[in-house]
Structures are given as structure tokens and as C-alpha cells.
Image 1 (tube, rainbow, N blue to C red):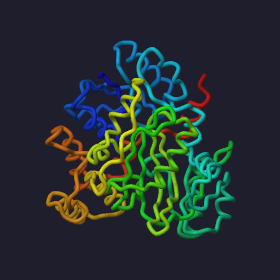
Image 2 (cartoon, one colour; image 1 turned 45 degrees about the vertical axis):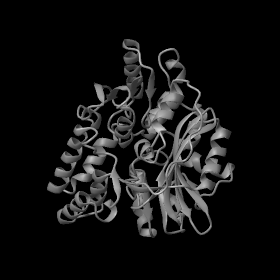
Image 3 (spheres, one colour; image 1 turned 30 degrees about the horizontal axis):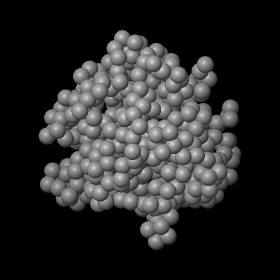
Image 4 (cartoon, rainbow, N blue to C red; image 1 turned 180 degrees about the horizontal axis):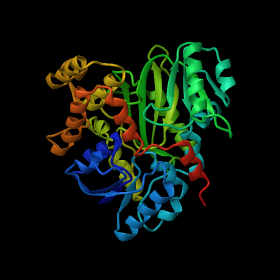
Length: 407
């Protein structure tokens, strides 16, 4: 099939290339001239487009013009472009295959405040959650330690830990300066969850779960990246997410971040990402999430896949190095971690890389090597790298409002 990816900068886009590239023709649109997808033998063409985050209408028109200029079997929204495409799904009818949920349901799981309300409605477990709308309400909160979350954000950029009142004062002042209060904007405060940090990925077809993949993290995702994990199976989560997806008549990809308590066998859900995720490490366990997503996108009726193999380990070396640098690691510490990755020790033992795989796609090593070199030269550059990359695909609160107002 001929596929158009809605961006080429994210982790998910890279994993989709590994999963689908050997079997299909893939083009990519992205605002960055040197996005990750440009460094892949699986990409036929990259088209530079307006930035989705700041110019959603211009981005949409570019995407539609590309589809009018050349037929594609499917458009695969690999990141938060899902929000825009679901809002205007009717514009793609007759042009291409597209799997998106109803916008009103997508909106309920996309924002952190709406997601908290949805979990309460369906009686699904979450850590104790408070929703506030002002600087004063934030300062009045006393249930430390906790996490403070703005309604929209990705890659950990929207979440701040607060261990005490001093932390909360700093966060409240930061959010006020950034304009996160007023005009109905909401901020979510969530107490710390307990258990094993986990992620559950799924693909639905009109409310039926047709593929699933579960991982337990082996390294805390403090930056928002599940960059080191091991496949697992939590049957209670399968049942709960299956029930939720059926009630929402979900169509397309979705994944949930949660903490799983092995003693009680119960999860605590902390966040939802209404899009495809983890397709390549799912494939390593025998679950073709990307393939099912593509079939659902083109309207092919698919049968559910069984869960994959448990105990399959994966890592993403580039993100692990970047995470360490963002947490203050020195050059020496980064070199040690790099050596462990080369020799397969520590967290890298019996683990497979899912972002840079030169034997499958030699060009995938180029951005990984470039990022590694920059981090070794200047570890503080990690924050700049994250900002420059995430802005290519992350949805901002003003953009979300503009998309909701579209006719």
C-alpha cells in the first residue's frame, strides 16, 4: 500500500517506519527539514509542511493538497495530528483511508482534565485527582507529593512534580506567567501512584479491540518517554480498556499510562494518548499493531490478534541518554551508559534497540549518532533538543482551541 505519515519527527513515526516500511511505500510530511524520517531507507519522499502546532489550518490544507495531488491508500496520524484529523474527518472521505474516533470522544481522553472525569464516570481507578482553575487554588493544595499537569502537552513537557509547598509555589508562578489560568483553563493535580509504571497500547475497530500490547517500564519515564521496558500482560487492564473502548466506540490507536500493583492486581490510570504507540516493540513480541492500524484505516475487517510474548525487553538508547542528560548526568556518566549499551550490560542486557537499527535501516543510526555526539559535547543541549523536536508535532492549548472552533 501507499501510506502518508502525518509527521516524521517522533519516536512513533520511526517505529512505524520499521514496522511498515519493509512492506509498503511511505511518504512523510513534516515541518522540519531534517526530521528523523529523512534518515530512513523506508521513506520514499519527505514533504516540508507548515507547523501543525502553530498553524493547524495551513497544515491541514497542505495535507489535503498532497492527497489531491497523489492517491494514497491511507493517512496514518502518528502523533497529535490525530486531534485535527478527527475534527475534520469528513474532509478526507473519498481521498484516502483514515482511522480516527469520533471527535467528541477523542476530546474526552485528550485533555488531562476531561480524562480524569471520564475515569470517574467509568469507575476506573486513578490516583486521587483535583482539578483547579487558578493560582490560588493551586497554592491551597496540600496533598504532597503530587504531580501538577496542564491540560495539553506531550513528552513530559506538561507535567511538574511537587514535593512540598515551595515546589508548588514555583509551579504556580510558572503557570501564571505562561497564561495557564483564566478563560476556563484547567490544571490537574494528581497524587503519586504506586506500583510498576506501565503502558497499554491498543488498536480498535469500531469499538472492538483488535490488537494489544502491554509493557512494564524498567526505567522510570520521568521525561514522558517509555524508553526502556519489558512486555507483560495485565488481564484486568485488557478488560477495562476493552470495555472503555467499546463504550466510546473507539476507532484507531490509543494507549494508556498507568501504575500496576502486582500485590492487588489493580492498575491506577494516570494518562491517555489517543493515538498509535509502541508499534515496533509490539512487533518484537509478535503483535503487529501497525499492520492492524493500517488495515483498520483502509476499512478492512480484521480479527483480533492474541496478546504477544511476555518478557521481551526493548530500549531506545538515544532517549535514555537524553533523559540522563536532562536529569544532570555528566559526560563521564553518559559515556558509561553508552558503553553499557554497546556491550549489552545493565538495562541493555538481553534487550533490543527500537530506534536505531542499522542492520534493518542503516540511515536510522545517523540521527542517533548526531544526538549522541551533541550530548557528549554539551549535555545541557538535551533540553534544547527536546524543545526543537516536540514543537514539530505537539498540540498546544491555543491550537486545540482553534481546532475545536473549526467549521
